[in-house]
Every structure is written in structure tokens, then in C-alpha cells.
Image 1 (cartoon, one colour):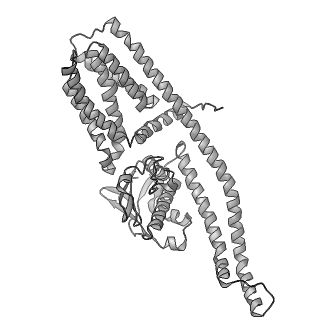
Image 2 (image 1 turned 30 degrees about the horizontal axis):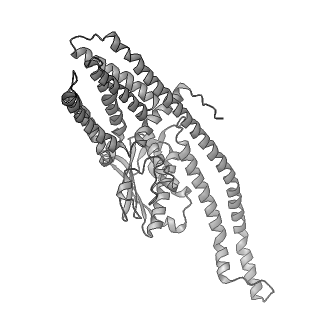
Length: 438
């Protein structure tokens, strides 16, 4: 049986705020459709309620404002990367205006006719589907209050009949029920995330022990294997009775232990990356310090288990270092994810290299990470930072799990910066990480 997690006020609000951002993220692929419905519905229903089934009150200007708010959402996939950070704010303001504010105001202006009572019920149902519990309550309270204020300033009389007022408890109950349902969903999600982290930590612990043992054993054998092989060559030269070993096997053994040790360390790094990505859902206790971007890059490349061939593909352009308010460990893991992606794309393309450069100018500080491997198909570029989004064709996210690049975006947001991607399929992929001034 699942135990319900008990959250403090700070953790509760933190999880609710994170959920509000995720709601925008999860609707990324449907935002165009929802925006299209909005820009069609506002003018269409103006014609329906003013001409086809006339109602006591209609307002074209309010509907045009709603249309203009939904219009940018239709083209949100084409927004410049620097502007996408404002998308959650636009999303929530558009819903605040078009659902609780607009429908409540029209309900009041039409003296709570049956048509608009039913319309408000539909609006509340839509809010319950689109918003988390905290946003639902906030939108309902703020939107309703704004509608009452506008109604009070524009109406000749603000008296509402008793029969009309009886609908208010029904609306409040609908909001409370929707908030309770969404709150329960949040608690289940929090418990699932805790269980995922606990399970991942347990698996990681069980894997690290044998991996460490393998690495230590390989390192120890590596000290003596060359001497044993040399002794074999001496014994063979002296025509002693030793079992024959083919030359190709001897050459393979000379590098085998080093490969085993490298692969063990590589597996440990992958475990670290997965744990760090999973734990990013819990940001409490993370402190931001003054960091050097060059130091973070060099530390990441030193720690990442690169083969000699892979290391030769990476070039760090000489350029001015810059400092930023961040966390070195998180930044190192961001670079881990970018390196992992780039190396996989280069391997799939059978060509390419990696170039890391720094930019400091009037536009701000930035880290540019470019690979000339496989690239990303245009239809996937706008989705690669969405959590759990994967492409079965290209697998643009780390390990195909859809968490690596979402982790990078979360870290950059935590630092007060942003990450964007430009890519031409089969030519290059470039990530631009923009940092705030220290």
C-alpha cells in the first residue's frame, strides 16, 4: 500500500510550482492545437451568441484580446530560444484571461443565464484539466476577482439575483473538487519520484560495488600482465614447453585490461548521470557559488571516461574565461550529457568532431557546444528539452530516456540562464548555454 507523503509548506509550494512549469512542458506538443482552438472559438462564439442565438450581452473587444493572446501559442515552436523562457508566463496569463476572467465577466453581464452558467462549468472543467491544483485555485480567485471589478466599474447596477447567486457555491465546489483531484495526483507523482530515486539509488549501489571491484582488479592485473607476457616470450624463445598463444591474442591482452578498467569507470559515470538527472526533481539545498566555465569544462572532460580516439575529437577554443553563479557539480553533469549525445551522434554518422567555445560580449556570457555529427531532424529540435520526450528514429535525448537534455535545461534555469539548440540534419548540432552575469 502506498504511503501518502507529508510535505512541509515550503516543499509543497516548491512541488506545486515545479508542477505548474511541467504542465506547460507536457502541453508542448498540444499547445498549437489548443492555441488554434482559442483563435477559432473566440470569434466563432461571438457570432453564435450575437447572431445565431442572441444573448443579452456580447463584447467583441474582449474576444479579440483573447484571440490575440492565443495567437502566439500557435507559433510557439518557432519562437526564438531566448523568448521561450517567457512561454510559461504567457500560457498562464492566457488561461487566466480566457477561462475564469472572461467567462465570469460574461456570466455577470448576462445576469447568469443558463447558457453562461453552462459555459462557466465547461470553463472550470477545462481549468481542472489544464492546471495543477495551486494554479487552479489562484486562477479562479484572481480571474473571478478581476471579473467582478470590471463588472462593478462598467455595470449600471451590480445587484445579482438570489437565484443567480445560488450558482456560486456550485462553482466553488467544482474548483475545490478539481483542486483536490489534482493535489492527489501531485502527491502520487511526488511519491513516484521518491520511489524512483530510492530504487535508482539502490540499483546504483548494487552496481557500483562489482564495477569498482572489476576496475581495481583490472588495474592490479595491468601491473603484472606485461611481465607475464614478457616471460612467455622469453620461455617461447628458449623453446620451453609452453602452450601456444596466437600473436593476435597477445596483442589483445595487452590492451584488454585497460579497456576493462575504462569501461568500468564509464559505467560508473553513466550511473552518476542518471542519478543526477533523477534527483534534479528535488532542488532543495542546492547552493549557487561563483564558478569558472573553463574550469567546469576541463573538469568534465578530465572526469568523463574518454578513449584516446574520442578525446582527439574534442577541441576547446582558446577564449576568455567567464564566471557565473552556479554549481560546479551540476554544470559538469550538463557537459557530461552534451558530450555523451555528441559522441553518439558522431558514431552514428561515422564522421564529425566536437568544438567547445566561449563567448563574452555585450549580449552576455555563453558556452557554445557544437558537434558535426548526425544532427537532429527539424521536427524534433523544438521538443528535445521536454522531459521524457524521445524520438524512436534519432533518440535525441541521453540514453533515449528523454531526461538528459531536460536535465540540462532544468540546471540552466536554476542558474538563471537558458539553453537552446540549432541543428541541420546530417551536418551539425550546436547548443548555446547562456549565463547571467555574476
